[in-house]
Image (tube, rainbow, N blue to C red; front, side):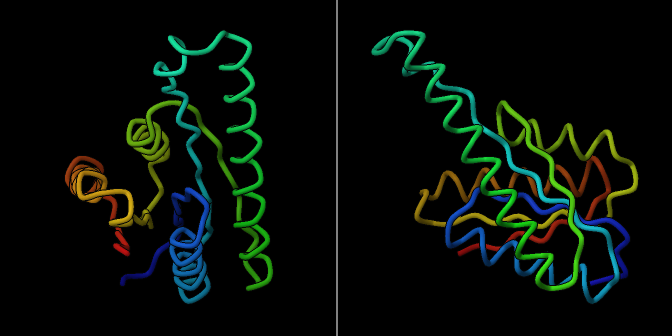
Length: 148
């Protein structure tokens, strides 16, 4: 691990993400880096459109946004307890695309910390590995992928 100045930690919430957040906090503290947590609300809920009305879909999306705010708040509180004043960013859309877009717009990020779990299936782990490799190759950003 090199000396990092700005770290981004992608978080989904839940037990596996707590470990990812804690690792990002640990690295930020050890390297005196700035830390930003990012959470992407997956708004690709087309499967609900056919079985529910627009009102239900809007309610689900609002609930997902509220959960996202809570996830980010909890991550920031965890960082604060460790002496790190972390920022947060919430985005909506396709997770991998939103993470890449966020990183692409900020030229000074040195490290992305993200996790994936086999509980979500092998395809999820494969997608996370592909995203990590793309970010390393295309953006020149170090990626720490924690597989659980």
